[in-house]
Length: 93
Image (cartoon, rainbow, N blue to C red; front, side, top):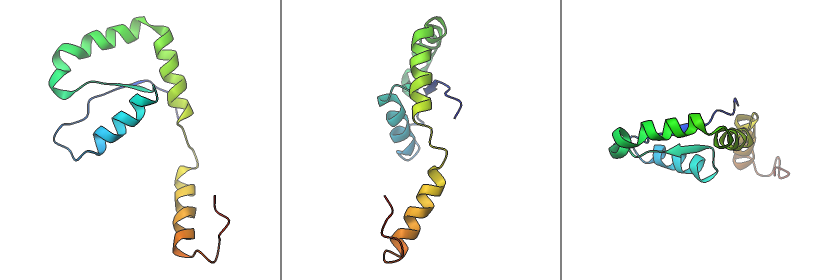
């Protein structure tokens, strides 16, 4: 919603949802991903580079804002209702 660029460090011992979410945002240019094992040597150079590169931050901000879906919860609820009662509302799409 705020379009904030992100630096993500997926926790290596969590189930893979953190990796999937980080990769999703990274592939779309909204975030940078640093591996946990590489954190000590990579985080400061990455953050410094982002601080100094207004263009990169702007592109990340734009990419993050493009992913914002304010009605996502309502859309998911409607889809679930349609799946539960397909004959009631076949027009979802």
